[in-house]
Amino acid sequence: MHVCKVREHGIGVVTLSEGSSPAWIQMMPTGDTAGVVEPALVRRAFDAVRLQSNALRLMSTERVADRLGRLHARLLAPESTLLQTWAREVSAHNGLSEPMVEWALRDLLGRMNTRALIALVEAEFGDRDPFGAPQMLAAHACSRSANPPSSVFHVLAGTVPTVAVEAIVLALLGRAPNVIKTSRNEPHVARLYLRALRQHAPDLASSVAVLTWEGGDQELERLACDQAAVVVAYGSNQTIDAMYGKCRFPTKFIGYGHRISFGIVTAAGHADRGTGPPALSRLCRDFALDASAFDQAGCMSMNCLFVHRAGPWTVEQIARGLAEDGFPHVEQTLPRGRLTPNIAAAQMQAIAVAEFEGRAFVAPTGAAIAFDRCRFEPSAGGRLLNVVPYSTDEELLAALEPLRGMLSTAAIDCGNAERGELTQRLSRMGVRRVVRPGRMQRPLWQRDHDGRPRIADWVDWTDVEP
Image 1 (cartoon, rainbow, N blue to C red):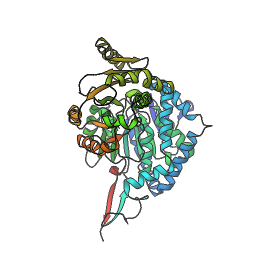
Image 2 (tube, one colour; image 1 turned 90 degrees about the horizontal axis):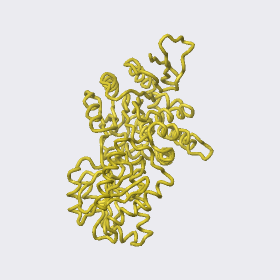
Image 3 (cartoon, rainbow, N blue to C red; image 1 turned 30 degrees about the horizontal axis):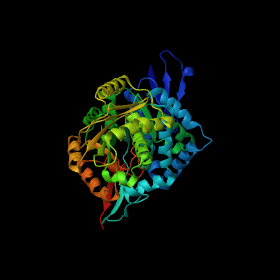
Image 4 (cartoon, helix red, strand yellow; image 1 turned 90 degrees about the vertical axis):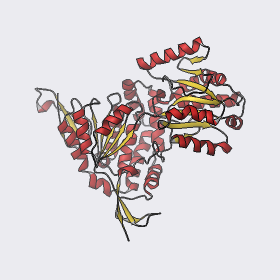
């Protein structure tokens, strides 16, 4: 198989079988690749998106956000069936259920309306249009102008498919020509979104290219890192380390490796919610959603739930509530997908040991395990949640101490009076995001990611002193 490319609003890719004639060429959508990805194609991908850099930079934030917001509104319109079609295609490949994929896409696109996109740029840069001539910005003694990177290279993981949409949208808001390498486990969402973008905003789509090749190809990855001004990588810690090693100054590297998330139910949290069965049901359903989204494969998925011993419910009662009410409730609308053999085996082993000790509470597509002492217990995955007791904040923080630097999100059910102090102590432990139960995998759009700006880190600034 040989791959070459032609131009159509940016990059178009054709696939040629050996011995074929030009009449047999099958045209692929702009930005897509099929077959073997060769070094020449990677170079041409970067060259093609960089050709659009000046036109992209001259667009106002309002124009970019309006075009994207209109596209998202079309995709979410009641008469549109595109997202259902996308969900079928993605589900067939990566194992998540169709309702789960569609829910995730709808939730993300619903948060990325025109106003929210503009607000993100204003929050990150202190101005709606920071890419023009130098201007005075608040809290700065000199005039400033942001300079977008000549190109961004995104390396995506296959666990959370919606990250592909975020990668495209963020790059466009940051006026950055964007080359995306998808995971072979999830190559579809970036292409499907780019195809829709090409139909409704071809001038934006021309700044994006999507490639797919087997991870670990040293030549292609080093070449792509050499071509990019900014490399943004998602994946395992090993993947992040490998990509970082391929970058050379002055290329900027931003890596999002493995992180762990958890939940907390404080004694005061029980009091604020109430102590009856309805309160327990709401709590278990919220936490079940946090442990079910993306089948517990994301960094913001709940692994472990800490429950204060002074509350009206024991860890066993909450674990039972998760198995008998929380997980079945979520399953009705967001059914679990296919478990990988490794996750299925690890889950079966964890449940078997807990059942022998009388600590397992199992639903058909979800399970909770109750523990009797305070220690962080990572989940086997696939909607299995470990429920752990604690007596004091000091005991809780001691259990989290080995994970310092790896913590992502904490979902806290607590009283308003204690929220500030607990959040501050968790922040010092390295927790990057604090939410209420039920929101772990539904983050605000205008937020930092892993404790850093979403796009402001990509740019360079020119300062003009008075």
